[in-house]
View (cartoon, rainbow, N blue to C red):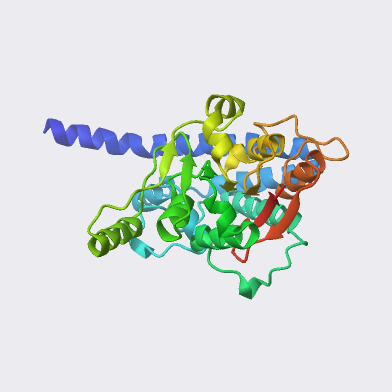
Length: 319
């Protein structure tokens, strides 16, 4: 009887709490829209119309318990992008809760389209149909290194794979091509299943355990170059495939030490590097602005494009 009474009390209070939560979410969305519109200097009438739609949608509250439960679930972002394959088994919501949420995600889509349009690399001369999958970018980049610097030059010392993450490029260079490579990354290497499979195959063929590439778990910066002077001097080429924050240190220190290098920049990190400026003095916030910043700041860089999807522009120097 006590359990039944508690359940009745919970059922009686649930619609009110749901309505209150829904109202809180609407208030937060209205405040967010107001800040976005004020920051962009849009016409005030746009905000008023959105407020009116929010007010009209709030009057049509859902009464069915199952529908209320569905509304409280988060929206499936994969469904929104047309990529969710779970169907009814997906634990997230496959419908917009109201017009306000629909307008919000429509605004997000427009923002993403404008961002993509602003970052189209018109200098990319690789035909779209000729670009290979992003998954084999390490193989494609390794082929570029061999064609650009030559195997003899790469084998003259260990290639420094800087900010190489789990070691995919290092594995491609040393374990598949026999080019000595040292991974420089604070995170420990983590081989994939296909890597372990190849190592077992090599061990079965030779009867010996293959020697993995070396790793130095450290950040690549001025302190690293000073502390690991022997490794730096003995290295042949410095490479970075999507090295994130390490892109500029690779370029700057390689040009200072007169070392050949090749870097495929990816992320901008505008908030982390606010001192980077465009030619007209504005902050560097887009990918193309970042590439232009590198070319202006470090004269003598050569540019190439890999036949691979995604960020494929290479900045390199053979010295």
